[in-house]
Image (tube, rainbow, N blue to C red; front, top):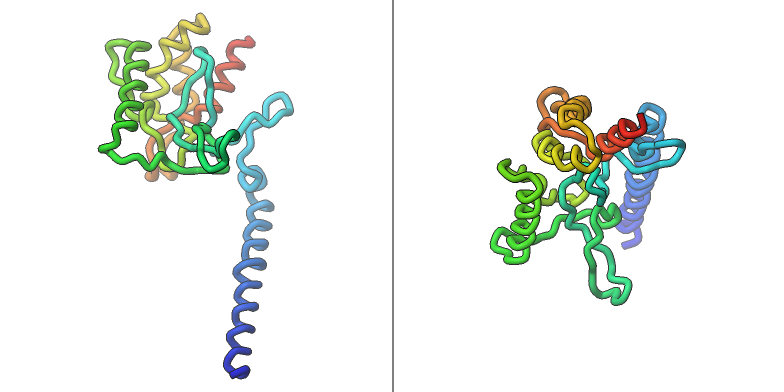
Length: 201
């Protein structure tokens, strides 16, 4: 019996060493050498301080900032570890809400967000990505339509001309990857950083 177990155990140890240790270390080393910024998390710095990642969305609460997609991520409730509480853009718990199309809670949340956005910018259709969460809950990008929808609110809050803000959005527009994959998009963090720099001038 030992003759049968020995090859299986040797194979298990060898495959664990190759696929669980050697391969990940090699890929990490190559990535760090060829794409150091991306391998480090695509972090964005401002004034020598890390303010976020271009890959992970974050909340912007001020009226003078562009908002991203809603986030359905959660975290453990500090008062009761067996429960969770909303924690938008919690990168340690990437997930969607898991609420289906017949969920009353989802319908109520979407309607509430839609009504608030409609009141903010009457007469314009609300872009769908401003009221729906992504599968990860961490989406850092919004559609160009979602960014342009927010221009009037930001123009009022910052006392800036709307045309200038539209030009700002156009300057941050990213096309499809390789011209084929995905949709045109705007990174919310990058856009807000440019917006803050504009206000400093």
